[in-house]
Amino acid sequence: MGVNADKPGRWKEDIARSVDAYNDWFMRFAPKAYRDTRVRTTEQVKAALKSTANLTNIAPALLRADPAVVQMLRMCTAPPLARDRLIGLAKVAKSLVHSMEGDEHRLPPRMPKAEVDAQLASIGDIILRLADRDIFTWLDDGHKVAVEEVHRAATVVADRLCGAVADPIIRNAQEARQLVAIRHWLEARKYKFIGAGEGTRLDGMRPGTLCFRLNVAVDQRGGDRKIKIPVDVAIMPHKAKAADLPLLIEAKSAGDFTNVNKRRKEEATKIKQLRDTYGHKIRYILFLGGYFDSGYLGYEAAEGIDWVWEHRIDELAKLGL
Image 1 (cartoon, rainbow, N blue to C red):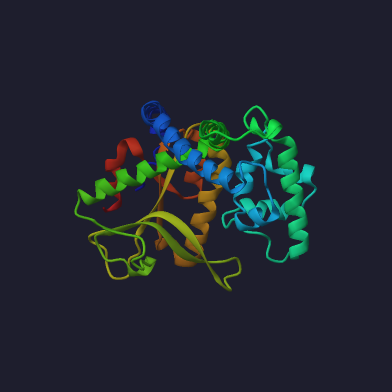
Image 2 (cartoon, one colour; image 1 turned 90 degrees about the vertical axis):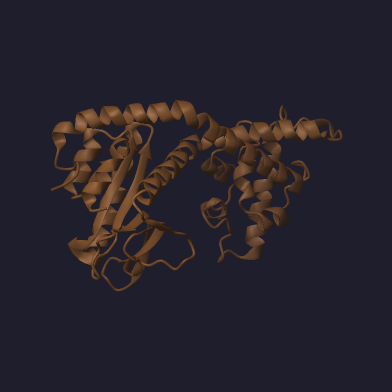
């Protein structure tokens, strides 16, 4: 018997309760999460401004040394530039900017150095030409920059950066809170948390343990090699047997109904990869908090994915925990 996927008669009530719970959290905690991120971002912008001599020297050497700074520089213009707009105006390779702003923040390894430097110089030229003179007031007359001016400019740019990624900031804060809730629930039932760096593997967890952000090896298409996919929570029940695998949980949070239906295929892809590799003995559920409508729930149920609502966290016990 399932937990919630096989009970559509109570989905409507759960959706309403989940939305109310999310809205209550948002009103009480989201502004702080945003402010804290803005404070950290302001300091990062200040450091970037220092490295560019307060935006007067955006040399290729600087961009080469710190590729990630290009995202901040896009927010220094009037109007702020979208990534593809910068690419078009500077007439540079899309792969260059995408690589600089990607997860690894690097330059394309196969692009010749001379070509990279020429394109970086073009990016610097565009940023300087379009720099927001109302923020960077010293660019017009070259006056000595006061500390207060740098702080004011950094705050404005940080606001722009945070505004561009406001939804991920809030979502990450909520999902982090969900993991804390799961951990507290489990530790109250004598589960031991295994921290990062302890070499945890899917097939090596002891009964009564849990871990976060476990990378699980799955077969790639064709089964000729393995890739790793991240799972938010892995829990080995107290009564697990030697051949059992841990329960896997994906923490999902959403502040509107639109985005979840854009992202719902992610879980379907993940469960297919897990089942193709480990068979149907693998257990994978969702931990939902926020805006998840009946369309999303029906899609996940059809894929054989069950879920526990954050507002009914005690239903984790129905999973043998």
